[in-house]
Length: 301
Image (cartoon, rainbow, N blue to C red; front, side, top):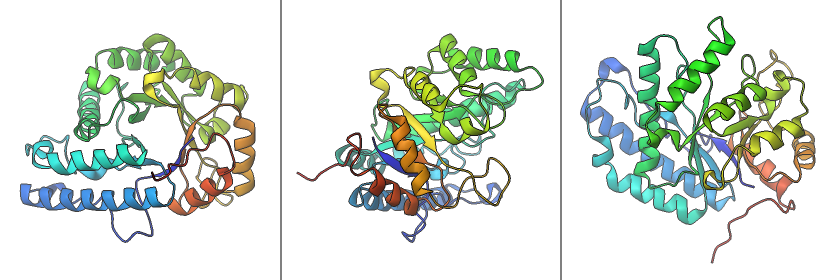
């Protein structure tokens, strides 16, 4: 079991997701921005390693506009050494990596142009992980998408599009249940059609489910992962007490997380904390899990 947080370390003093307006795009601007993002990413990963946080979601903005037609610059070749060195550090540190494109990436869109742009964005994400030399346990997670007035047709359209993806994308793609449209049960049905692994979102399941208990859903989704996919990943958060249902908490609830660890046994999962204060809650969670026999803490030789 690894525990981590997504994209941003709020206390480290730099950002790995800097971008700029499309109107100001230039190759010089791109190179400068990506160089800074990669340098900060390495700084975050070093900090995480030093603090026993061995799961991290890399920002989708690492290379701004990488999938946009405006970007013809060979960024993979230009940053070949930096990307390879980052990947080598990740492997040696025992860190698990994921990525998560934003909500505008929808494979089941009826509009072929939208679906095509989504595929291009997934190809960019896969290209980042490939350039780092990471194996297929580094995953790209995605929601199924929209309902578009016909849930069954939308599920079938996702399955058809998935089957047509480049193998470089399919080997990394996992789907997750969401808080409004598609439950874990829906994702399991897509898995039956396609074989795509299902990443279980604990908080989304609390908001939107088919009546099954969390423990059962955790077990069934975990069974969709092959050994080559690595330990199944999950997302974890809890409800913000002062906001609309489905809003993520600002800080981890220690009692709630400890109860989740108890209820999730014996399932071994890598846990991504989708909590607003990022590394602060990750440190608390690692401390709470320290005596759990599932918890993985990389030790120096």
